Length: 338
Image (cartoon, rainbow, N blue to C red; front, top):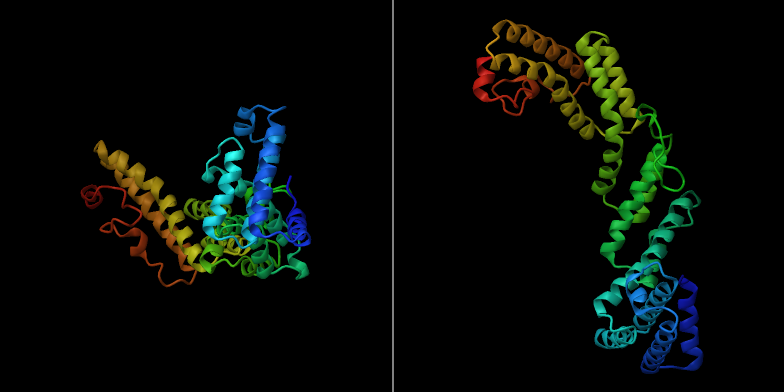
């Protein structure tokens, strides 16, 4: 496995030997030819090419990484860089330059992942900042597009860790969804990590809500169905929903979107049953199911009114002329008929 300290050693050696870029390139090319010749005495070219986990293949990839970094950090022009890397690619069994650069990236990325893991572990110490990560990217040659994806993944991993849905190794753990919640201080920690990683508010909010939402929906739907069945009062149902919102630190807009979906689900069942009987012209059952749907509507609306949100009016969910309402999945002609 390559070590970042080895990059410094190569740089120091270049300085001590007073080598210019041309001589550095010659040294790497000669070393590559000899290294590959020695490896192929004990390992087939097929294994060196195709077996990514073979120790000798990993040694080749390490060589490519160290050479690529040496040339880049040595200030080679783009044309000179491609020439030098192509010489090494040719020495390593005729690799293409694109294959070489892909293998270099695969060596560099784990280094940066470790830097990001260290960022999370040291976040409370104040010993990490965005400039440190920028220097790590420059040292390792991590492209900004790759770094952006890794930053988002790191933030998502922290969200899951705070919610307790993964262990210290990042593996999912068995936990009742209703017990999942953010501990005190989580939002401050996530805000600090967001700043260090340079994430937009949109990206950070998305990662928080996408993980938290799925642990909100079950409790909220159960509460809404409890209000519809009469097992819970609207006040108790809203208290359960609001408590879950606070547990998961959901923002108002995300909460509204989730409740819209939940009301649609809660009203969907009686409306589907109504439609089933309407298709066979069972007027008595259609009438009874419509009454159930109307009772469900009143129960849902009673819960929603407790939110204090003005944009939750009856037409938002219950207007039969609106294809976006809870009855929107029913054909317009059937909606008006019922």
